[in-house]
Length: 72
Image (cartoon, rainbow, N blue to C red; front, side, top):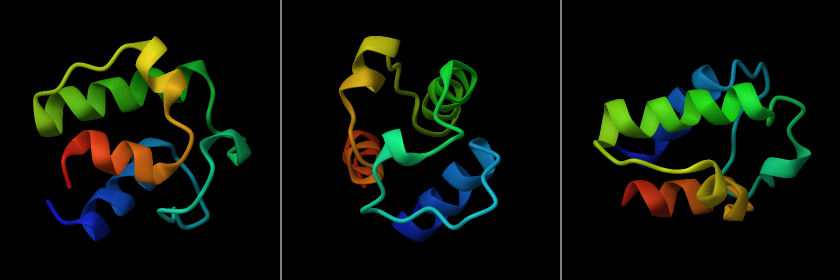
């Protein structure tokens, strides 16, 4: 998966209308709530075979942090 594909899939996962950019702060997203975090956890498990906890997700500040966790 490329970074561009990751950003598109993350946008879909978050059900976000606006484009998702690497430099975006997750806390700025209205969609960044407990339900979307659960969806992101499932996304990482399904697409990358990686388990991520709510605590770990809470430590991620930007979309770039998610990209790094994915190993892209």
